[in-house]
Amino acid sequence: MNSNNLESFSGTIANFVSFLEKNRYSYSTIKAYKKAVCSFFVSTGASPSTVGESDLKAYIEEKQSENISEGFLRQMVSAIKLLFSGVFKRDLETEHLYQPQREYKVPEVLTKKEINRILEATDNLKHRAILTGLYSGGLRLSEITGLEISDIDFKNMLIVIRSDFGLKEREVMLSIRFRDILLQYLKMYMPKKWLFEGNQSAKPYSNRSVQQVFANAITRAGIEKKVSVHTLRHSFATHLLESGTDIHIIQDFLGHSSIKTTKVYQQIAKADKHKILSPMDMI
Figure 1 (cartoon, rainbow, N blue to C red):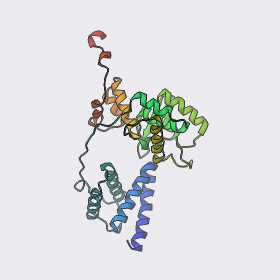
Figure 2: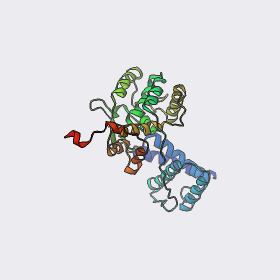
Figure 3: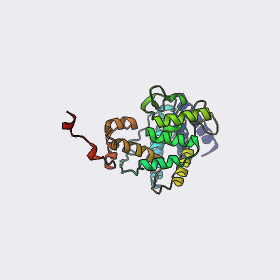
Figure 4: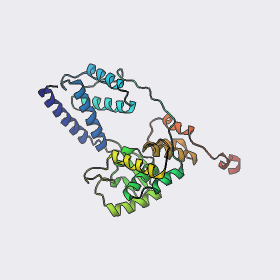
């Protein structure tokens, strides 16, 4: 990439970030999309003014050969497509270039006792609050770090999950246990905007930091299962299903667009059949 291309590339990135901020994309999404677009231009060496579908196709093929995850590749393609529509006002067709077939594998889950062991092994109040919030509401990693203080509705016992545009996407329950630990946390840490602030109060706690907090808790709790932060979300859904919660309600809590995604938990849940009453006994 020559100096002229580098200059236009830098200007393009700045314009893209400005576009994302103006449209109220979350901090974590802006960071991820900026990284994806930078990778694209550095890899192709093309000028932003002339780059086209052939460049994108070559880039996709290159990344697929590196055997990166489908989710990460999808995020990169989404970022590049949004760059062209938002900054260059050009529609970049990607469907014929990349048509992934998603496979829904049965995920690993933690038992309720294991969840308690993890929380009990976490002495730091802020860290325990984060892990409690992840499990108690079935939140994604980006959702817990993207929460603002105003998203906690203590009166109605709800957590408001917002989309990248800052609009209300869905609501999940605010558990009593999470509420209690949050009240302690807010009194001690006094965050200003983000519910869980990073080292700089103007920025939220990083996803990487949460992952490290979880990994440390797993080690201290002696959990040997191969799990990640997302396992807390899988466990939340599975435990709700086992307790008799309607799967469509769980779908709403998780924010799944398709019930097929939620139904994977039916392969894990172990209902206590002896506790289920016949309709005859309810008459």
